[in-house]
Length: 226
Image (cartoon, rainbow, N blue to C red; front, side, top):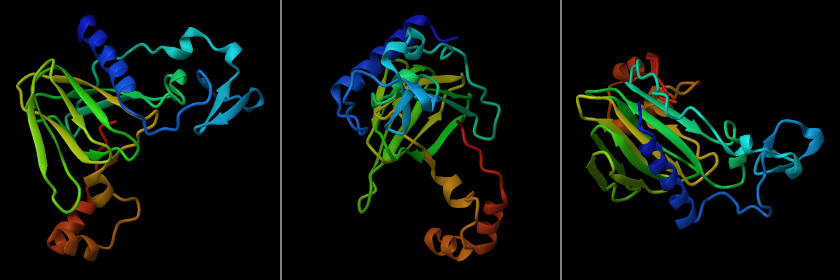
């Protein structure tokens, strides 16, 4: 169970992230826009309907449950619980979101992925992580660190990054992202698990792989940690 003090620190991190960087999402023209599904009493802003401000409540700006460990009993040994405007309506138009990342001992992996609409700041609460990112063409430089509780690491906008638990105990981290809906594209899933498979010839040439291996990879089930 994550200590309350650690969660408070995580929320402070989110506040700092949102105030010290320019979020990708357009700046709102009103104090807030609470997401609502009722089209009869709303206007559309940033892809969400906005509740009449006079009807907003404190519950629109709060969320409970981030202290609950995620289920990591899957192929990756990982679970990501991301809190966006869908779960916390008051986040709508504010350009921030938050995620809890749980990684199983001895190799739990949040696999290489990128966020098309946001940067990320990671705070480790428990465990030891090997984390890093790779820069874009043409350099493809790898930046990595071994992270322990209290350590921070930033993943720049749109770059492929990952987190691996190299410890013998469960790892927990909190990620603050600079978008209310940063999106996520897991590289292996997108390449080998596309809903309409890519022609094997595309992948054999791009990845220097044997066609039989490509077809075998495409036939496998690709798990998302979210």
